[in-house]
Image 1 (cartoon, rainbow, N blue to C red):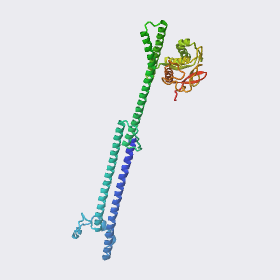
Image 2: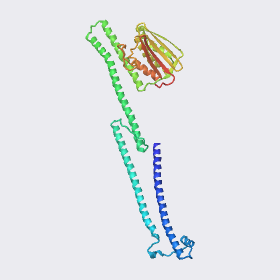
Image 3: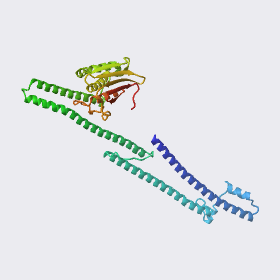
Image 4: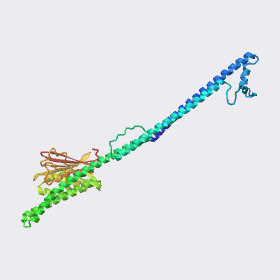
Length: 408
């Protein structure tokens, strides 16, 4: 479209310039004709006046008819005076004017041609300069210099090309920045994973060395070491499984099977998964809500998300404590709230608990800091949002599943 507009403008300018040259040339020809006519008529008038004075019998009308007649017996009278009627004008003033006009016309054409050549050279040099700029831009981009600015508002072909190159540069710049950001995130994640795995592995190796070095170790100590090794192996296994699940979301390879499921089913399934931990810590989970409330989701993944939230609340609840789970719906969203009565989350940690590998001040020693990050990723994949409130009386997680897609 822009190329067409430029072509139209260029064509209009060319036509206007050509029209001006033609008009000037035509006006000059008219002026030349009028000059010849004026000189010739002046000469004829002088002849008529002279003849009528000397020959009164000859009228002016007779002379005019002779001048305009086509049937006159022409004799080469003027040849006697050295005038060639085929090549020269009998009116010497016209002959002189003809030479002047011929010179002016030739000069006009030469100047016009010279101007056109200058314009052609100017535009060629301009094109060469712009092409050199484009080549330089491409070279700069190839050197990964993405700080180039292109200020060009014209609409010729090369300007459009420069603008397209600039767009490509911006895309490459964003891609490079994202790539660098991804590398930094990957480096940080690998460091976090290494740290998370290193601690339990070190503990396992120490305990195994003790078991090997002391074959006569008493049964109670040996059993304690074995249980601790199993706990560390379970932690590593949970970390690996959680990372594999997160990687599926990061690479968009999760195959969701979305169907209409009741919130009560999701809550009950998550409750059953944490029931062994609840029995161990003597924590009761109380559930109540609207039995008809439902959402369209992947049931397995949403149970996984809620399980991680419940597990976090159970781990931070006091012995013989209680957790209250409420679910329902309104005109905007369905919701699940999980309320514990533990020590709460420190104010400085509240904005970071959904970050991967983040461990707050009140986190347990064996906490990995990845469960809530996985829950947030899963919930948001099903058009949901999870928030947290905490204080001295405990922590409350609120999960909302919106009917319309969120733009936040």
